[in-house]
Length: 185
Image (tube, rainbow, N blue to C red; front, side):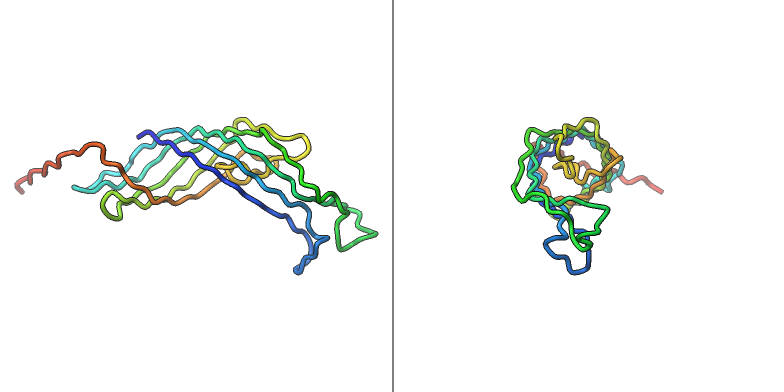
């Protein structure tokens, strides 16, 4: 089966280091990522349905591309020699900085299932493993989140994801169901 996915995501995150009850001086950085993605690929059904069922257990692959921007809302400097201010960070900037025209592409391996819950409505879940092929980053701020790929970590091009779906199958044509003849035993 051919598979296509597209989406638009916005993710904001703050990194707080410090004590159990953090104060404003414990904020290391705060950023927001906005962007769109498209994924194209194939799914291979590995499940033989019983008569009249349309459930799918699949293994698939995708090529994905994302175009996005990041805004660094505020940051502080991490100082490993915290002699003068042992409980906080040196202040950086609270002026938002926009980093635009960023993009990334990756390959994904997908394993999932779709189960018909009633009349052409399906509930699905899938697990994904992605590998970044190309990535355009800003010189001043690394990509920490890529829409469609999820979190990006230092030193690794791999990422994982989980999703669930509620979908409707558009019946463009109808197959006539022919009952299987029973074999005499």
